[in-house]
Length: 175
Image (cartoon, rainbow, N blue to C red; front, top):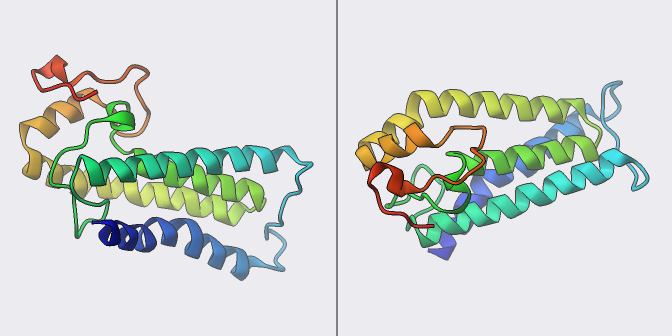
Protein backbone atom coordinates (compact mmCIF):
# COMPACT_ATOMS: atom_id res chain seq x y z
CA UNK A 1 0.00 0.00 0.00
CA UNK A 2 2.84 2.40 0.80
CA UNK A 3 4.36 2.18 -2.70
CA UNK A 4 0.92 2.80 -4.25
CA UNK A 5 0.55 5.98 -2.18
CA UNK A 6 4.09 7.19 -2.92
CA UNK A 7 3.46 6.70 -6.64
CA UNK A 8 0.15 8.59 -6.48
CA UNK A 9 1.71 11.49 -4.54
CA UNK A 10 4.72 11.70 -6.87
CA UNK A 11 2.50 11.80 -9.94
CA UNK A 12 -0.36 14.04 -8.75
CA UNK A 13 0.46 16.63 -6.06
CA UNK A 14 4.16 16.78 -6.88
CA UNK A 15 3.36 17.65 -10.48
CA UNK A 16 0.93 20.38 -9.40
CA UNK A 17 3.08 21.80 -6.60
CA UNK A 18 6.68 21.19 -7.73
CA UNK A 19 7.05 20.49 -11.45
CA UNK A 20 4.55 22.97 -12.92
CA UNK A 21 5.43 25.89 -10.58
CA UNK A 22 9.14 25.17 -11.09
CA UNK A 23 8.64 25.20 -14.85
CA UNK A 24 6.66 28.44 -14.62
CA UNK A 25 9.32 30.08 -12.46
CA UNK A 26 12.07 28.97 -14.84
CA UNK A 27 10.13 29.93 -18.00
CA UNK A 28 9.32 33.42 -16.73
CA UNK A 29 12.81 34.20 -15.40
CA UNK A 30 14.00 37.52 -16.76
CA UNK A 31 10.54 38.72 -17.80
CA UNK A 32 9.11 41.87 -16.28
CA UNK A 33 6.40 39.93 -14.41
CA UNK A 34 8.76 37.16 -13.28
CA UNK A 35 8.85 36.41 -9.60
CA UNK A 36 11.77 36.72 -7.29
CA UNK A 37 12.43 35.01 -4.01
CA UNK A 38 11.18 37.05 -1.07
CA UNK A 39 13.46 37.56 1.90
CA UNK A 40 12.78 36.54 5.48
CA UNK A 41 12.27 40.23 6.27
CA UNK A 42 9.17 40.40 4.11
CA UNK A 43 5.70 39.52 5.40
CA UNK A 44 4.81 37.54 2.26
CA UNK A 45 7.68 35.16 3.03
CA UNK A 46 6.18 34.27 6.41
CA UNK A 47 2.57 34.17 5.20
CA UNK A 48 3.71 31.99 2.29
CA UNK A 49 5.64 29.70 4.61
CA UNK A 50 2.58 29.38 6.88
CA UNK A 51 0.35 28.57 3.88
CA UNK A 52 2.84 25.94 2.71
CA UNK A 53 2.90 24.41 6.21
CA UNK A 54 -0.89 24.26 6.40
CA UNK A 55 -1.02 22.74 2.91
CA UNK A 56 1.60 20.09 3.69
CA UNK A 57 0.00 19.12 7.00
CA UNK A 58 -3.46 18.93 5.44
CA UNK A 59 -2.08 16.94 2.51
CA UNK A 60 -0.38 14.36 4.74
CA UNK A 61 -3.45 14.07 6.97
CA UNK A 62 -5.89 13.55 4.11
CA UNK A 63 -3.61 11.12 2.25
CA UNK A 64 -3.12 9.04 5.41
CA UNK A 65 -6.90 8.86 5.86
CA UNK A 66 -7.25 7.60 2.28
CA UNK A 67 -4.81 4.79 3.06
CA UNK A 68 -6.03 3.85 6.56
CA UNK A 69 -9.78 4.39 6.25
CA UNK A 70 -10.39 4.38 2.51
CA UNK A 71 -8.05 1.48 1.73
CA UNK A 72 -6.87 3.25 -1.43
CA UNK A 73 -5.05 6.32 -2.71
CA UNK A 74 -6.06 9.74 -4.03
CA UNK A 75 -5.26 8.57 -7.57
CA UNK A 76 -8.21 7.96 -9.91
CA UNK A 77 -6.60 4.67 -11.01
CA UNK A 78 -6.44 3.43 -7.38
CA UNK A 79 -9.41 5.01 -5.57
CA UNK A 80 -10.42 4.26 -1.99
CA UNK A 81 -12.71 1.32 -1.41
CA UNK A 82 -14.47 3.05 1.50
CA UNK A 83 -15.93 6.55 1.66
CA UNK A 84 -13.69 8.66 3.90
CA UNK A 85 -15.68 10.90 6.25
CA UNK A 86 -13.20 11.62 9.05
CA UNK A 87 -11.04 14.52 10.08
CA UNK A 88 -11.13 17.34 7.54
CA UNK A 89 -13.57 15.38 5.35
CA UNK A 90 -16.25 16.09 7.96
CA UNK A 91 -15.84 19.82 7.21
CA UNK A 92 -15.23 19.95 3.44
CA UNK A 93 -15.49 17.39 0.63
CA UNK A 94 -12.20 18.22 -1.12
CA UNK A 95 -9.52 18.92 1.49
CA UNK A 96 -6.79 17.42 -0.72
CA UNK A 97 -7.42 20.08 -3.35
CA UNK A 98 -7.43 22.67 -0.55
CA UNK A 99 -4.02 21.41 0.57
CA UNK A 100 -2.59 21.85 -2.93
CA UNK A 101 -4.13 25.33 -3.18
CA UNK A 102 -2.56 26.33 0.15
CA UNK A 103 0.84 25.14 -1.11
CA UNK A 104 0.45 26.99 -4.42
CA UNK A 105 -0.56 30.16 -2.56
CA UNK A 106 2.53 29.77 -0.39
CA UNK A 107 4.76 29.35 -3.43
CA UNK A 108 3.23 32.36 -5.17
CA UNK A 109 3.90 34.47 -2.08
CA UNK A 110 7.39 33.16 -1.34
CA UNK A 111 8.48 33.51 -4.97
CA UNK A 112 6.42 36.72 -5.46
CA UNK A 113 5.15 35.20 -8.69
CA UNK A 114 1.91 36.24 -10.37
CA UNK A 115 2.31 33.41 -12.91
CA UNK A 116 2.43 30.81 -10.11
CA UNK A 117 -0.65 32.48 -8.60
CA UNK A 118 -2.31 32.21 -12.01
CA UNK A 119 -1.42 28.52 -12.12
CA UNK A 120 -3.15 28.11 -8.73
CA UNK A 121 -6.33 29.72 -10.10
CA UNK A 122 -6.19 27.55 -13.23
CA UNK A 123 -5.62 24.43 -11.09
CA UNK A 124 -8.69 25.31 -9.01
CA UNK A 125 -10.84 25.98 -12.10
CA UNK A 126 -9.90 22.66 -13.72
CA UNK A 127 -10.63 20.75 -10.51
CA UNK A 128 -13.92 22.61 -10.02
CA UNK A 129 -15.11 21.49 -13.45
CA UNK A 130 -13.70 17.96 -13.02
CA UNK A 131 -15.47 17.47 -9.69
CA UNK A 132 -18.78 18.75 -11.06
CA UNK A 133 -18.74 16.77 -14.29
CA UNK A 134 -16.95 13.56 -13.35
CA UNK A 135 -15.73 12.91 -9.80
CA UNK A 136 -18.98 13.48 -7.94
CA UNK A 137 -21.00 11.34 -10.36
CA UNK A 138 -18.44 8.54 -10.01
CA UNK A 139 -18.58 8.76 -6.22
CA UNK A 140 -22.38 8.58 -6.29
CA UNK A 141 -22.16 5.42 -8.41
CA UNK A 142 -19.55 3.83 -6.13
CA UNK A 143 -20.94 4.79 -2.72
CA UNK A 144 -24.63 5.41 -3.47
CA UNK A 145 -26.84 6.92 -0.78
CA UNK A 146 -23.93 7.21 1.63
CA UNK A 147 -22.20 9.71 -0.70
CA UNK A 148 -25.47 11.49 -1.56
CA UNK A 149 -26.07 12.15 2.17
CA UNK A 150 -22.46 13.27 2.58
CA UNK A 151 -22.73 15.59 -0.43
CA UNK A 152 -25.95 17.10 0.93
CA UNK A 153 -24.34 17.90 4.30
CA UNK A 154 -20.71 18.77 3.60
CA UNK A 155 -19.77 21.66 1.29
CA UNK A 156 -17.56 21.07 -1.74
CA UNK A 157 -15.02 23.89 -1.20
CA UNK A 158 -15.76 26.17 1.76
CA UNK A 159 -15.60 24.21 5.01
CA UNK A 160 -18.47 24.06 7.45
CA UNK A 161 -17.46 25.30 10.89
CA UNK A 162 -18.76 22.30 12.83
CA UNK A 163 -17.87 18.79 11.68
CA UNK A 164 -20.71 16.85 10.11
CA UNK A 165 -21.87 14.11 12.47
CA UNK A 166 -22.77 11.36 10.01
CA UNK A 167 -25.48 10.20 12.39
CA UNK A 168 -27.58 13.21 11.21
CA UNK A 169 -28.60 11.11 8.21
CA UNK A 170 -28.78 7.79 10.00
CA UNK A 171 -25.25 6.77 8.98
CA UNK A 172 -22.58 5.72 11.39
CA UNK A 173 -20.53 8.38 13.13
CA UNK A 174 -16.80 7.76 12.79
CA UNK A 175 -15.44 10.84 14.54
